[in-house]
Length: 206
Image 1 (cartoon, rainbow, N blue to C red):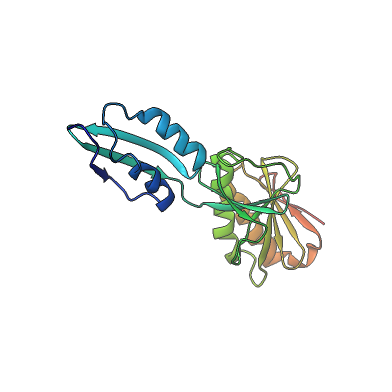
Image 2 (image 1 turned 120 degrees about the vertical axis):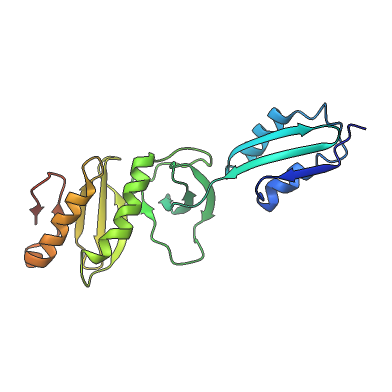
């Protein structure tokens, strides 16, 4: 009576998270310290964004788990990390991610701790938009790198022609992308090193 024998899940957690939860079987349902358990799981498994555990008497626990999903790959200090849409680093991929990826490169090489928010949601969404929309704007060139600029408000797209396209993520990106489209159709020969698009309605090229 009141011994945990059943655990149900609203969504299937990862194997490592589920293993910790399943270890609750056989314990008294009243003395399971759910708050402490959740805190420990989130500390050990930064991929867990949110978790709730409900007691269902006499012997069932219901677990509601929300895990982070990949939004971008981040490169700092020669290490690759997965970050979610909130900019939280939740998985260390090591020095080789194992597959071809296009990371966000932090050339300041700031240290990264798992569970830490290293970028704003605005930054992540802007990066995703540039990765999705840029290829159709630069014709036969390819994006080879996406760099953090002089501040967290600046993103630099590097093409395989060694051209840097500089964006201000706090300004409307669609307008800046329209400027890229115009430059590549009408003025591509004038761009040798970079095109700075951060002043709306203008583009500074070199």
